[in-house]
Amino acid sequence: MRVAFLACIASALPACFPTPSEKFACESSSDCQGDRVCDLGYCVVGQRPPDGGGGGSDAPSVDAPPDADPFEAIKQMCIAAGYAVDAGSGGVYRAVATGTSWTNAQADCKDDVANATHLIVLSTPAEVTFMATKLGWIGLSDRAAEGVFVTVTGETGDQRPFGNGQPDNGGGDENCVEMISGGKLNDDQCGNNKRYVCECDGKTSAP
Image (cartoon, rainbow, N blue to C red):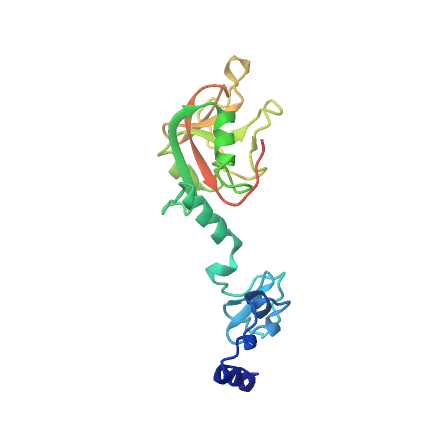
């Protein structure tokens, strides 16, 4: 293979060079040359597994570089849409200081990058700390069923540091959740105008 490749270089024939799709398409790492591994159907620069395994396209490569991570492209799209990486949490967010209703806030976030952005979901303690510096609507509500709070992404196990006596469904119609001072959550009427934070994590959301 190397001899043939050198011969091609010496002859400078354009036909010697395959198109990018032909050159990098693969089914397993055995189809790749040099230090490339097969990831998501293409040979990318990376490190082969210690056992020399195939590392098929349906299995993530060992020490996969950024170009093998589908979220890297999504993150760049979000950054182009005004998002920024938070050093503390590692998340990608866009904070909006203008107040609006919960449904409008979620719609605005969801419209940034298709199937990738939404109102922030507090997945980690670090995100709680981050949101405590911003305040406003988060992607949590019990709009569908009273008392059953769900995230806009359908995630479970998220952080829910409700304040004392909260949620209380005050007035019988507080179905959307906000972050208030002190890093605590409070349920409030969804139609109230509040600031909010959008999150880019590549997850689809509803509504």
